[in-house]
Image (cartoon, helix red, strand yellow):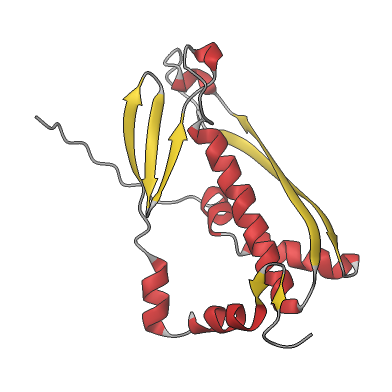
Length: 177
């Protein structure tokens, strides 16, 4: 395969050049952030998130008296984790010259104590206490190489590592008139 050929839907040589450019301090600073999302309440339990030039709808399940017109924020968190692992897998496979035919990442989460979110208990973690991710892949490589690519995808996933590690979260509140 020629260096400039597409692999897995990506221009392989250009991808490698872009990734190598992250070594440049100015490029590194530019891609580090800030990354932003603005979330605007719509009605009931619905909200819209605005990111760069993209809009995502959010809602809660109908059995919570919501309209269930979109995925919930916590489902989108799981989806973001699965998407980030997927992209990392494809990037690492492409760098190694591995053709991927099929890839699916299934992510499941279990709340520790959703009763705190509901306001019926005062203690406990309302968030996910356990999240699992499993990849299913068909690619032109041996199992050990594919396992290593998956490991790199998980270890290099900004979303997975944000979820995995404790992070400082700064919140502010302002009343507008």
